[in-house]
Every structure is written in structure tokens, then in C-alpha cells.
Image (cartoon, rainbow, N blue to C red; front, side, top):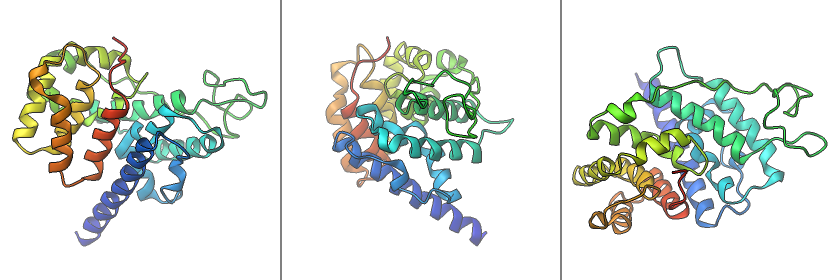
Length: 253
């Protein structure tokens, strides 16, 4: 019991450290960001933190890539994906999060072969455009029926858990489905604020800043500022609200 509590505490601390680093990099427009500099690369707890935060660990690269750092960070992400794959009974949220990290790695850290040609569509094995001996992680096919069928409280909960997938070019089908339920997401945002669930409110807010036809009466911009302040600068809330500022609009719909 005590050992489990220590592991959970260590993971929470690692998640907070990485989230802080990502948010600071986004504030600085992604300059000189390196995921590998934020964690001990061989530490299983650090790799678990990468899986918890998902695609957000590469969010600064969506602003400005750094080829000098990209190769090392790609290896870190692949180790995290290999260390913590979704199980056979994994939820759709877990599958979407895993797939989102795979997609983010390919979108924001494209591989290049020795000739400088993008190898993102290659096989990912030694000699096929990837790191020597590195195989591409699998891409699970998570279900998406819940986007249309979930009642709005459940929809907002799942959307907040997948806020990292609101980054540009990730999970376009999911983004389109959530955009069709903007009113329900807005209701979920208000509910989360009233319940003082700042992390959920911030996560839902990230989808809303990219959605069409958000009602002006929601006061989304001011609401996100309020959420960040009331959270006591919770690292994950700060990451979400910073990302909402850096990646507004421009959704695939």
C-alpha cells in the first residue's frame, strides 16, 4: 500500500514537472524545447508521465520544430509507447490517447532518412527511414460512437480527458464529431466550473476554442482565465489554458 502510494506520488510529480515544462515552452512559442530535457529518459515513471500527458508533450513542436532535438524526443516517445501500450480491455479514451501520441510524433517530429527525405510513411525499421532498429508503434482503432451518443455530461468528461488531441492536425474525425456538439461541450464547461472541476473545465475549453459557433454568452476567454486562477496554477490546468491561447480556431472543420 505504501509502495503504491509512493509510486503514485512520484508519477504525479513527474506529470506536473513535464506539464510545467510544456506550458513554459508554449509561453515562449516553443523555442529550444526538448522533452528529453524534462525527464530522466530511462525512468519508467518519467515514461509513464509521457503517456499520461499524451500528445501534449509534443505541443511545443506544433509551434516550432527543432530538428536538433526531434530525433532524441522521438526516441523518448517511442519508449513510452512501448512501455505502456493499451491493454486488451483498454477504454476508448486510453486508445485515443495512445493513438494521439503516435500521430503527434509523426506530425510534429517527422522522420527523415539520410538523404533528408521525409520518412514518415516508411516502414519504420532499420534502413527504412527511422532510427536504427526502431519499429513504428501500432495505431489502435478506438471507437468513436460515443461522440454522437454520449449524453452531454459524459461527452464533456471524455472530451476533457482527450484535450491533447485538440492540437492542430490530430484526430480530425474526432474533432469534427465534437465540433458538431459545441452546445453540449459548452454545457459541460459550465457544469465543470460550477463543480470546481478545473481540470475538466480547462480540457473542455481547449476543444471549445477550436469549435465553431461557441455562444458569446459563454464568456469562454474570461472563463478560461478564471479557471486557471482558481486552480491555484495546477500544472495541467495551466498547460490546457496556455494551449488554448496558443492554438485557437483553425480546426479541420
